[in-house]
Length: 156
Length: 406
Ligand SMILES: Cc1ncc(COP(=O)(O)O)c(C=O)c1O
Image 1 (cartoon, rainbow over the protein chains, first blue to last red):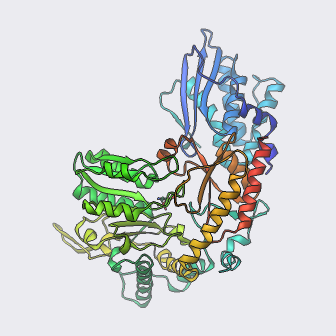
Image 2 (image 1 turned 45 degrees about the horizontal axis):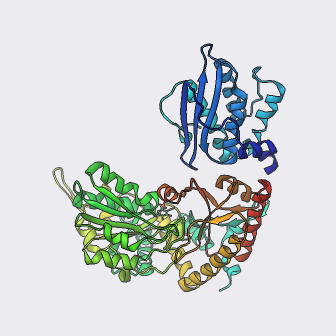
Image 3 (image 1 turned 60 degrees about the vertical axis):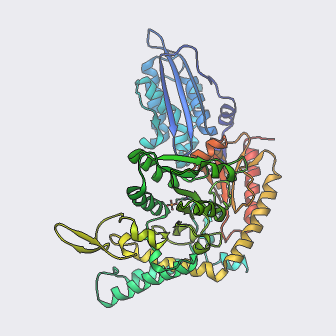
């Protein structure tokens, strides 16, 4: 295990100054997520335009550096994408973290792939995987217009 | 007492964690086990195993005797009046559920009040919440101050003619507050209100004398007293155990069973239905012997010294904040570091072999009261040394380095 792999500079930086933080003025979808084991909380605000493009994506919440950075990076990567592309990116990320798959998606450019891979250090810390995936599961829930709060203990 | 000698009785400390010497500061969660306890489990399964109380062959008689020996040891350990007041459960949580359920069945009506405190572990809240939900009881939370001390005057004010039971912890598993339960029990007794004490954290670290306390119920988890998992103890005054209805039904807790009628076994079997964790109860006797071989006074002295040492040292680290500052504090030290989430703290110190806990420690009400989403917790056991605290502090410094906190 290597702490430097987990806490890469980009993670620490996003953890400290998360992007797209705060409730946006206009949104069409929202969802809440919660990790009852550690108390991490996140709320996602998603604004889809008529062409089903992610016009805005912001979040609020509190949690560890991993969960904050992961959600922050997610908003950067997904903003501007079509709904379909956004769904693919989320699946790709979850597959990468949980099943050690490569990022297959053609939706991301090389820089964006590097960014998403900065979160891959979490794989060595099984107890922290849920921190990294909370925001992504919550976005997924917002996109699917699910009503109930995402609970990290309800999925594996 | 030489701590090195005590520590050498715990085989886990010869193991390396992440290539480092293990610094175990999570005893409030569960304590490590001495060789005598591990050996007893092994020996019982290898040489003495049998179910208890049901057969008359030699193995069963011997196993039953050993099981009952532990009951006698527990009786002495907490100074109960009779062995019939010692009920073995799965853990403290089950012990509290036993009381809440049976007491609730018999004595709680709609609008009746149950008084607990803001310090309580979920185990001493949720069982009462069920009575709120199912019977319309009201739960009142006695407030604490920012130091983590219960406000006794406010506590008194919350007792009304409807208060049916008071349930509170002896020692907080977050702030380390040693609650003045004797004083509180005296207040309750004047009004004839029974008191349940959650003794989960106190049993390994304080002298317990239920006769002196005059509490009605006292709940213990054996795994926190250097004993096996799967065993807890409910102490209850005999008159309660005799008058309350049985809890779990099944084999072992009955006297006579007819198609139209059932009568129950005398104490303590009335509350011990089904096959018990036999080997674990037998092995728990070794935990008590272990505690007694050191002596509770020595345990308290060592842990107090270490707590003072840790607090002094940790307070000197910039941006470290200790959660609560109670008048009397045991070796449970929760803390936060400005700018670093407790989860990140735990992961980083783990790299140095330091085991602490991060989260809300099953005390969401308390964390909300103290405006904390979560905290990190270092908790002390009899095997901890000053060197452990030094390594913890160095690991905390490393957190600040990783996060570049000034
Ligand atoms: C104060 C307190 N009460 C109750 C419990 C519950 O103990 P168990 O999970 O062993 O039943 C704990 C354990 O963390 C505790 O610290």
